[in-house]
Amino acid sequence: MGSKKPFDIVLVSLTWIFAALTFTALLFIIAHILIGGIPHLSLTLFETRHTTQNVSMFPAIISTIFMVFSTLLLAVPLGIFTSIYLVEYMYSGNKLVSVIRSAVELLAGIPSVVYGLFGFLLFSQLLGMGWSFIAGSITLTIMILPVVIRTTEEALKSVSDGYREGGYALGAGKLRVVFKIVLPSAVPGILSGVILATGRIVGETAALIFTAGTVPNIPDSLTSSARTLAVHMWVLSNEGHHVNEAYATAVILLLIVLLINTISAVIARAIAKR
Image 1 (tube, helix red, strand yellow):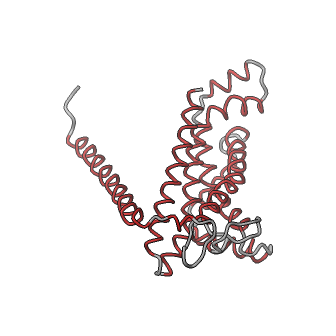
Image 2 (cartoon, rainbow, N blue to C red):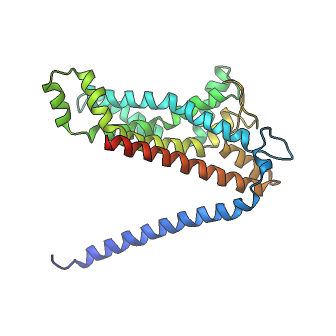
Image 3 (cartoon, rainbow, N blue to C red):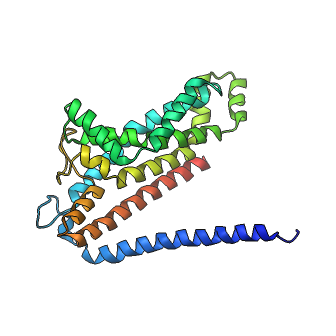
């Protein structure tokens, strides 16, 4: 091995420096949340009914879980099927594929507040859904679709063509090869996109304030207004009277995201081993 060139040494050093800065910033944020929130966690914050006295986050926790699963239930199948169509059924250079990919990239760059205004005007006003759980869920579905589509596309492209050719050689049709060979091999990559999408759902506020509203109750139907943990935290900090409780909410929000990511990573590893 020859000695490294000065330019290589500079690049490696910069890589380590920026990695260390990123990790330090992450630790600082986590420490700030934990130090500010853990001392203010109490049983009153987990009472089943929210009041102005206890400012319970329990309804927001339930609403967050429902919002995550309902949004993923809409976005993941739609995103996966779109990606399968683009990668497996359309030939490279097709103009329609270029248009769809350009649209996906455009959607990925739109600020969440614009999605909120769009959802409010279309779903809440024009379609008469009002401030409702379903309006928020559909708006978030549109918002996370670019993430699911792009990550699924890359996961499908990473599957070796030898898998496809082997399936065809055994007499399998296109549909069987895609769903029995290609898609299972791409699941770990697809789950990475689902994790990213889940993080965006859990942390979203602007889009939900305009569509789902801020009612601090457990939704009893899809047409009920509800607030997620992120919205609950925003409301508490914005009012200025319950800043400590907002920090406590941030701790629970952090734990929920960590739990979801851990479960997804375990599932991805289990599928990869199979």
